[in-house]
Every structure is written in structure tokens, then in C-alpha cells.
Image (cartoon, rainbow, N blue to C red; front, side, top):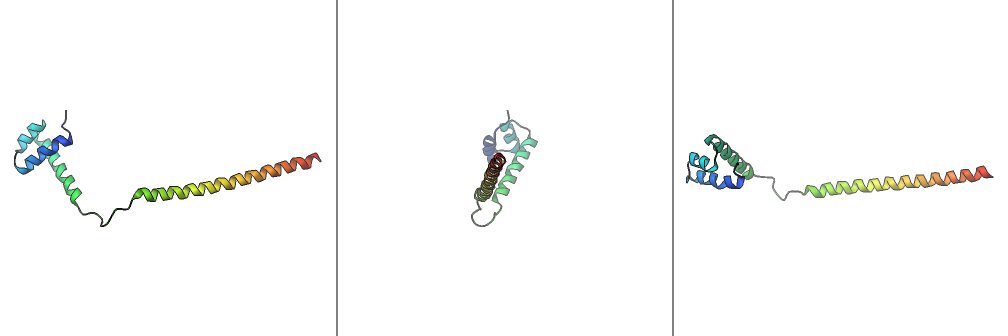
Amino acid sequence: MQPTPTERMPVILQRLAGSLTAMQAARHLGVSRKTYYQWEARALGGMKAALEPGRPGRPRPKADAELARVEAQKQQLQQQVESLEQRLRCRQVLAGADTLAKKK
């Protein structure tokens, strides 16, 4: 069974600190030295990416923008429904008036 990232992290840190050799770290994790080096490179790459400077300031919440868009769309659809209901009522009234005119 492959070790979890939580199990890999302290072994990689011990290796980087010089407490373990790459061979010892690989043996401890039950993988080849080549696989260990791949994991170490990915860990360091992830740490480097995490330490890259981001955009200044607080990030804008995407959920608020999406919510505003959905609310506007909802309001537009409600207006369309009301308009269609009004047209339907008009047609029903006209159909009723047409039926009354035919009976006379």
C-alpha cells in the first residue's frame, strides 16, 4: 500500500534536513529511490508554487459575482413569466368574448 501524503511529508523533510539519506527515505516509504526522488521533486515544486507571490489585496469572492448573475437572470425570467401569464389571460378573455358574440 502506498504511503499517504501525510506519511511522505515528514520523511521528505527529514531527508532535506540531512537526517536521512535518499535510500533510507525510500526504504522507509517502501518505494524505489527513483520514486522517492520524484515525490521529493513534486513536493518541492508544490512548495515553490505555493510561495510565489500572488495578486495584492484580498481576493474577490467569485461566489458573490456568480450569485449576482444568477439573481439578475432569475429576475429577468420572472418578468418573462409575468408577461406570458398576462398574454395568456388576455387570450382567455378574448376567447370568452368571442364565444359570447357567437351565441348572440
